[in-house]
Length: 110
Length: 192
Image (cartoon, rainbow over all chains, first blue to last red; front, top):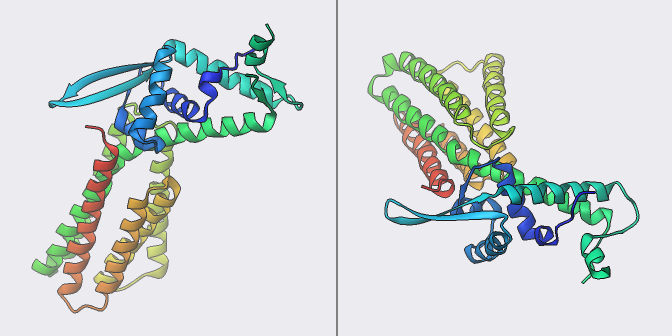
């Protein structure tokens, strides 16, 4: 069964992961473009990216372009895999009518 | 803490995923779309200015400019397609929309059949701006909607102006708005 990921399921992080996933493998996006695309504030996007980076789902690269600081973000292989699993888990859930308990419940129960 | 999910919540989450992916593809599409209003705005400025400076050669100049504009537009589309931008199906959809709009405008032009040069120019301009308004609504890009509406207003207002002011307003105001809107979109949607 596909794995539900509570870290990804938070709506803002789910949108970030979906946006990065739409870029395809190995493609990175500039912070400002991602922020404008999703309509986040810089602070909000930054805080969610930090959580995703800590989980190893995204890679953040800081550099200078024409002496101006730039930040580029890309999905890691681990992040892509986790996102695929999460979407699959959601799709599986759609096919079942009664409310289901996520993997968090399983962890709680254990 | 237990996380209970029901199918409705899963459906909402999947809708968020679809929407965010579309927003990302749209951002990359916007980052190259700006060039088209700049191109056609420049053509308008040149064409309508030539109507004032050399009215006798204006039809020939317009034909040449339109052919160049269409060829450059197709070449840019081909170039961007080979850049492998992550726009998914959105890129071909935008290309197909403008191709269909071009065919529709030519068919409508032949059906309505305006006689004088100024009306033909205004008619084509209004059709192009209507196309931008539709695309702006589709891509939820206010800059394209405003550009289409304001330029249409300028084109319609120019009909009440005496020559050569009508051509100058269509060229410099209409074309100028296209160029300005193109650069505005470029500033808003390119990262470099």
